[in-house]
Length: 357
Image (cartoon, rainbow, N blue to C red; front, top):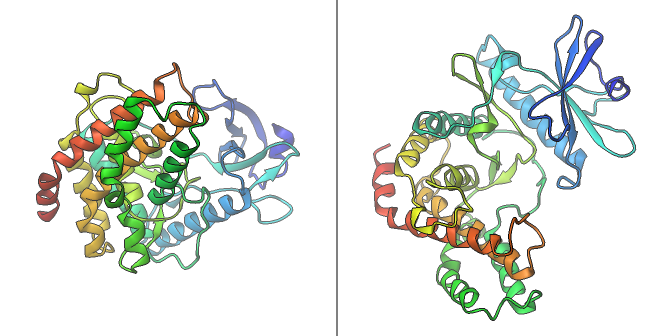
């Protein structure tokens, strides 16, 4: 590890390198030094993020812009409020290729923690933090690239589903349940693809979004205050629906996404209200009326999109998502469609609540 670290402009001398996190996959390490700050060394997942230069350029543009905003606002502790990636000794790049893997180093934010708990209190904090993240980046002067092209493109997912049904690679397309689920999805497909159409019509902008919004992607200090948003690999241009809807897809489902007990799947309205309140407190300053009035659509879109993705994989013979048993993707599909239906049943309630904020 020290040979990798030698390539970065670190302060002080490295005294120890320890696994950070659960230690099951040692891709992230805590780097201790004798006199400078401590650091985090991380292997970049090159299998998912093919263009590492684009990835790191996005992250550098975002963190630099946020840092400038914090400094202009007189923030006393900027180093704890935004991630800082360390350049190489030989140039300004913030990653190193050792011939096999790509590595990056950031300053460790001391006395910080992540939280896995999803309850109304932390959902409110998450909404406020991710709304603030988008707000600070609403005027970023550079055009970011897509680290995962078409990541949340519903029209693409619809095409992939049709192609899977036509190809019938695993011989599952003729199953009665598959036929029924496909028919149910087609009823809503045009409605769920409206974001792309609104974008083409020029009424829905793309903005810089985090695209992986969850409670565990925020750092808290020991008193429980949010320090900053982390895990910036998926930061890219998207509709604000990505950050808003994707958080609620997981946080506001009362059971796990692969729970086979479909009757227990239910949309948690209290989580929705808490997250939405926090989000609109920090994001209202830049949201357009079209974006705000379509937030209930975003809540429905993400379980629907995920159901389509699980279902497509099931029809293809389970080639993308890891499965624990043969019907795993079909169970996930049923679960997410049940969540979608539960969300749709609360549409009027969501609209009424958003109108009060």
